[in-house]
Amino acid sequence: MKMIIAVVQDKDSNRLSEALVKENIRATKLASTGGFLKSGNTTFLIGVRDDQVDSVLKLVKENCQSRKQMMAPMSSMGGNADSYVPYPVEVEVGGATVFILPIDRFEQF
Image 1: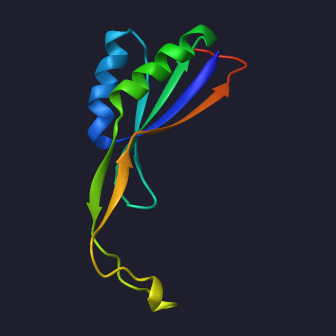
Image 2: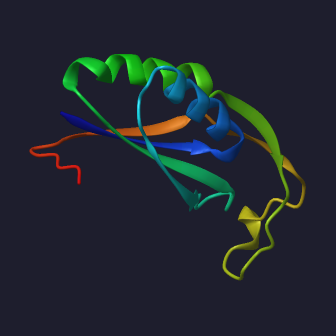
């Protein structure tokens, strides 16, 4: 058995959730916040049999696409002003960060 932890952008959350339900795969959704852009994320906790891992990864990949987004400049907080970018920059957001962990035991009450 494996625990799949998938951190996805909020914009992709509903699409992934619907795909998991359609395939009868249970998941727990947790609200989370990203560090770099401080944007909303959803973390999915998905417990599956070993033989289901690839199909879940395929669903995540199909439903969580990366995309370009403009990021507003962040003010210089002291230090070296040379690294401060005074204009919006384009960054890649979305997609998914996925961790797969072995599970020794599972109980449901």
